[in-house]
Amino acid sequence: MTETYRVTSTQKNTASMIHTENHQAISAFFPRKLKPICGDEVEVEHLKSEFRITRINKRFNSFCRADSRGRKQHIAANVDQIMIVMAVKPEPTRDILNRYLVVAEKEGITPLLVFNKSDMDPLFFVNTINQYEKLGYLTFKTYNQDPSTVVDLKRQLADKTTILAGQSGVGKSSLTELMMPEVKLKTGKLSDKTGKGAHTTSVTQMYHDSTLNANIIDSPGVWEYGLWSMEAHEIAAGFIDFDDFMGQCKFSNCTHIHEPGCAIELAVKQGKIKNNRFESYLRIVDSMKYWA
Image (cartoon, rainbow, N blue to C red; front, side):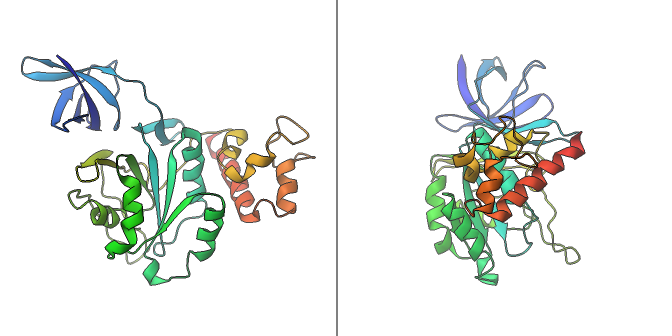
């Protein structure tokens, strides 16, 4: 008898998973030719005293990052949303938000921009929130210990699979437990010396919350995020404020960096694209040289 499950985590040759309907948890073996990842929907066959994965269903997307050599590494599959958490402390590293957004746009994953620990400095993210709301992104201002600030965000998680993203120490675990009390993520403390956190998750893990009928994915591969080797046009496609000007450049293969007649650069000069967004794009493109 074959049934359908969602993979919650993988080990060397086994996977933990939950039934897609009744959410019963099991562990199953998989052959070498199959390489399931967290979030995959799989067909499982019950053979005597063990379960075995026989098929990985087609993924509608996957969330990826760069491996140590700049290659595309698949972390989680079939992700509806990415919850990008930033905090007053530790402050976001430069361009990290836009790096997340590039892959979100590329894979068709809805971004939820969460600005946490706002009680520490209510004005810290004001300009950033205004800018990204104008671009059409969903933004949320939250406090770790205040349930009233996560009400709207919690609604967005219902019936969806959401991957957590953001530097360690920004409060991803605390926010998740406010919204999903039955889900217990591992937490890390900020270093007194660096002001940064140390990620405690060792494997990508999906948790199910029965109240919201929601899945939340936590991963060690997401907290300090690096894009895999990409071409300039792929990165530009992740900047939605470029959309209205794409295809208007003098050259069809314009990288929007140095070419004459670039419609993107003209839009920046005319104030139609924010200068800080364009500079971020240039830095991300420039960072690709490290994978050369």
